[in-house]
Length: 279
Ligand SMILES: Cc1cc2nc3c(=O)[nH]c(=O)nc-3n(C[C@H](O)[C@H](O)[C@H](O)COP(=O)(O)OP(=O)(O)OC[C@H]3O[C@@H](n4cnc5c(N)ncnc54)[C@H](O)[C@@H]3O)c2cc1C
Image (cartoon, rainbow, N blue to C red; front, side, top):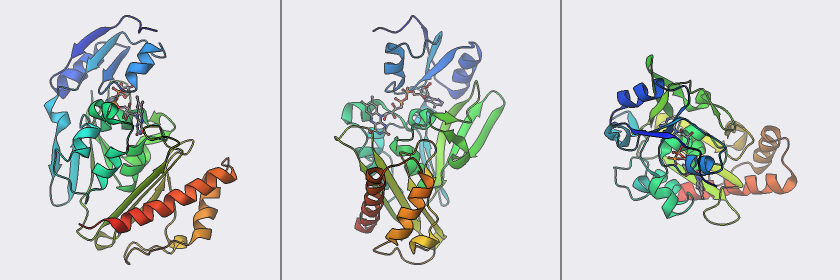
């Protein structure tokens, strides 16, 4: 099937993109097109106007300072995978990027497109939730920032309002001793995951998150104390598996035994992965 006819405009600045968005009641941003392309082809969406934001230089920025790391919305998965920009996550982000789909998708797919889409099985959603990211949003009323926890309200649902766009994502700088682990289980490489877990443990900064993706809604954070995990003590080699299972069963009530088993396994793998990292 071919898409319905649409207008196409390319924006070169965020302001231009916002003006273009405001000029149509039915405009869509085009980033990597890896989700939007198939949706257009299947006529699941039939926008009047596509606003191409991939040439906006500000959206491919990468800034690292003492306290935060900021990535522009149009940074591609491949750019992160190839470490074309400085990596401040001890290899965590490049590892996550390298497991997304396959190279052709990673070349074009962007973090902003992925976060705007808010697919529970998407890798960046769990990863940036574990990193306690803030979503930087530009809109007709100016800029605003939202924690990723509040930004994503459900499967494929966010608080983005009409005329707004994701400008970037920002997360706290990790200390040298931080450990981050990621694992996912997919039936075949390149497919969306059946189970995802992300762990970020940064005792020097008193931060620790264990996040489970592939829920029917938002990524879930596990309470860390029952897991025998502490934000201020070294990362243990093992978690309290009973507590892991109990929390998963509570967060994912509709999940069958197989589903719970793979969720437990993926958390163990994420922990093992975190221990493999040397900064
Ligand atoms: C075969 C295949 C396999 C895939 N496998 C995986 C996988 O394993 N893991 C994974 O995480 N992802 C996977 N993806 C998704 C892919 O990685 C992209 O991240 C995703 O398609 C969206 O990014 P995009 O840049 O292509 O966005 P687009 O397709 O261009 O846009 C997606 C949506 O977001 C909106 N949008 C785009 N940018 C912005 C912005 N800055 N602000 C606000 N709204 C915006 C668009 O208007 C559109 O509604 C897969 C995709 C394909 C086609």
